[in-house]
Amino acid sequence: MADERDGKGNIFLKILIVILSVVLIYIIVTPWQQKVAADRLKLSSRERMDYIRSGLLYYIGKTGTYAPTLESLVSDLKNDPFAISKQDSIFKLKAGKLVYLDSLLVSPVTKSPYLYQLNDTAAVKKYLLKCPGGSGSIGSLNVDDSTNKASWE
Image 1 (spheres, rainbow, N blue to C red):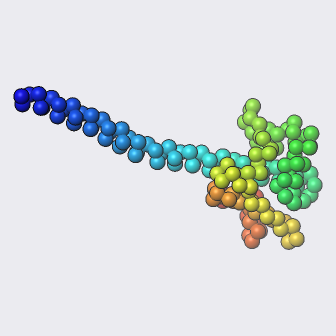
Image 2 (cartoon, helix red, strand yellow):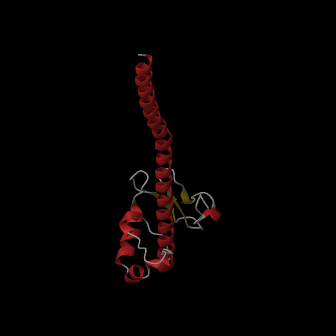
Image 3 (cartoon, rainbow, N blue to C red):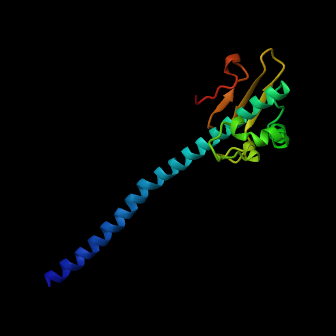
């Protein structure tokens, strides 16, 4: 009789150990996966902001001023045959990669539009491009030598 109880007890303990092991793995892996996903979104947001900066530099080279809004920048880039054909050189893309211009308006982190402010009344024209999700910013409205500098560089 003692042998029968030990066998049942061992099965119960084995099942309990398996269940607790699965729970422990879930507790460890889930936060790690969430962090990896958040880091991927942050990098994607910064990449889009780099593309916006490159587009702004192309725009200022073409017109002599910064685009008044991001919407007007994207519209101009979409309607410029040279910008469409030379995306790889304007945005410094790897071979075979394309920029979906409409996606430049929205941060992948929060699905909200990027914050873009322009100060074209000062001697040094400045802009601030900021991610609403906290992935960083490019430029500054206050510091003259921060034009086109990203906060993560």
